[in-house]
Length: 335
Image 1 (cartoon, rainbow, N blue to C red):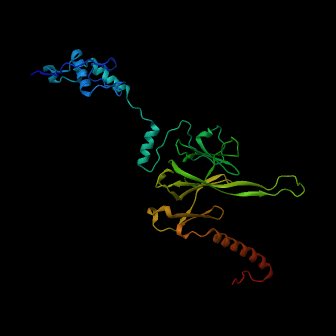
Image 2 (image 1 turned 180 degrees about the horizontal axis):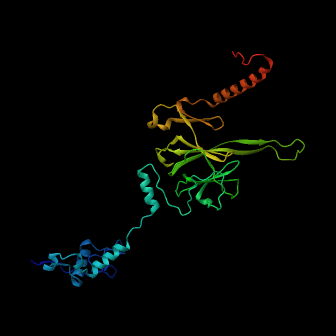
Image 3 (image 1 turned 60 degrees about the vertical axis):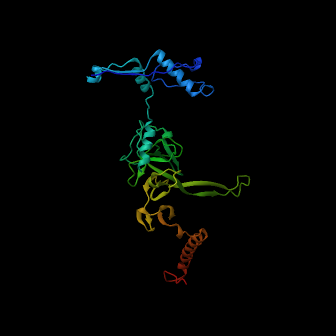
């Protein structure tokens, strides 16, 4: 086989380079000069000087002989010092990807949130309700939901939005204690991570001061949370997503009195089925947080109308109860 010979010939430089611009003769070394932006040298003089240095120290020559052309195999190829150094540099700059970032990238493609393994995770599914566990949990790894009669804990996977819930591990305790028990689960819980928006249902308890103690504090109001609603984000979208909307068809109810969690039974009256525009949905909660109904936003009543309707129904029941004592028939003939 013929041997190939290639020589790069450059003319002599017009002037030597400053010491701070002198560079190594390795072809693989990048050209980096700390004074490049402040130097007044032209591009032609700079390149001619660099090529002169390369010619004087290590000319760039490509040769091929019969042994290289035969291609005996990868093991028979001997790497020179420059190629070994280049391979070492590539190894030094290998990128190590964060598993959480990779999981977030996968989750952004689909609706499901990527599962993250936790060493402290303990699945409580299938355990007897109200059973007290013999260990303590790290409350920093859980969503703490404070209700009037108890505190509820649901596993909190790592997420910057802090709104991801893992219902596979849940506990309930008396208020501000560390005696952890298994709550009552009255409906099947999701087996994957879901994003939820938390809202509470309760009332304000107003206590009056005693009559015989005029120096006691005046009226005292206390917020009592009886139930907490966890409403799923539609398609697990983040709160900052421009297409964010709540999925009112999937609501999980935590009850303070029964220390239980269940999934709400929601009645949907909006046409369009599952592919409808959910931005126009309106959720109506009645009967002390036990009745859920989805209507169109255009059917929303004025708050005054709702209050009048509720007061009229209640006053009619009270009047009916009073008149029942004065007549011999069961129902009045209301006009």
